[in-house]
Length: 77
Image (cartoon, rainbow, N blue to C red; front, side):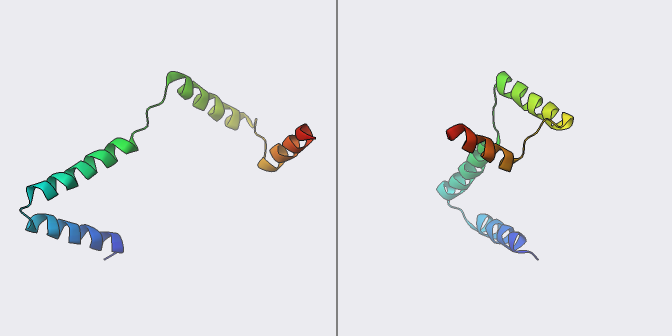
């Protein structure tokens, strides 16, 4: 069994063994909160920018990080 599976089994065992309602509610709140944090809402404008970025990548309109660093260096001096 992997470490993550062991953790899951220990948590399940402890949850099944407890009758502490506040404890169980706290665990439930952790899961609810973590699910909400996984959802990222973006605006229509942000979605459009992401689509434009994907199009640029598909067309090969990209610049390497080292080229960007060189451009920055020239611009700063």
